[in-house]
Length: 183
Ligand code: NI
Image (cartoon, rainbow, N blue to C red):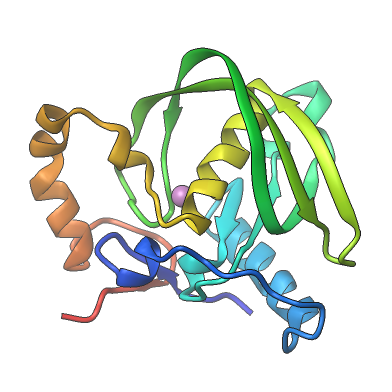
């Protein structure tokens, strides 16, 4: 089932999300719905707050990034914690399904080590680099209540103010179902 995607200005996007346990209701269905919602909106990642749930869950399918080593990179991250970020910062053009129509170059460190449980609650600790690290950092920020626009300079943010306000009011041009913030 395709779920509506929460939009910039929604309080749920600013919550520090909480861990879940294996008995979380209908988790398998929820994960399937998140993938369906993400594919429908042509995203490479989707975090639970983007479907209005403040829990530590995000999904990624990096196939569209078109890198040989990411073919079949489809993963579920539950209760993730980034243990370490290192390397030089590099710029990558980021976008977000909760902030449609805006893309900006964001600087982040090159490598991350992350611990999480997968959809079967098997504990994993892995290190990732470059583009896939970037997608994970972006989604991880969502479960920490952060958005990529938070990294922009005050000047740049000021310049985007009107467009961000438009998104909040549902005036952005989107071709997927959205959930607007309560006013
Ligand atoms: Ni996002």
